[in-house]
Length: 130
Figure 1 (tube, rainbow, N blue to C red):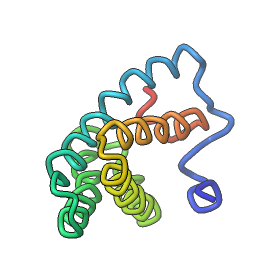
Figure 2 (figure 1 turned 90 degrees about the vertical axis):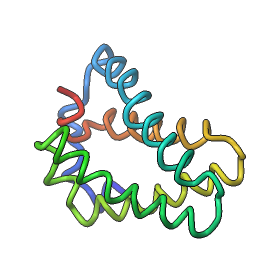
Figure 3 (figure 1 turned 180 degrees about the vertical axis):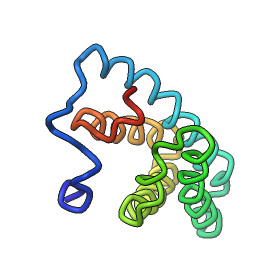
Figure 4 (figure 1 turned 90 degrees about the horizontal axis):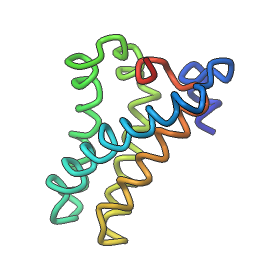
């Protein structure tokens, strides 16, 4: 489904080589997966209430364009795309619920990491590959 909505966010003709995927996987585990989950599902959603889930998700969505502007300006067109921000919102809520239901931060960390690996493995936008 994501492919139909976000076709320009991946390029099946530009799939990273296995060695490059190892590098992407290692980096992606720490940032964004572990870093973002500790902040947004750990600290900001520590109480796991409706309010903390809402606040955590809103800040998670705001974080993406902010992080792009500060760290990877070439990612701005993607990070401000309403379709991308909708997915970020949905995954932000899902990751909060995973944390609540499993009582573990590792579940959303691993799911976030796998999501990035799938995206990059399908030739996801190149700002994270170079």
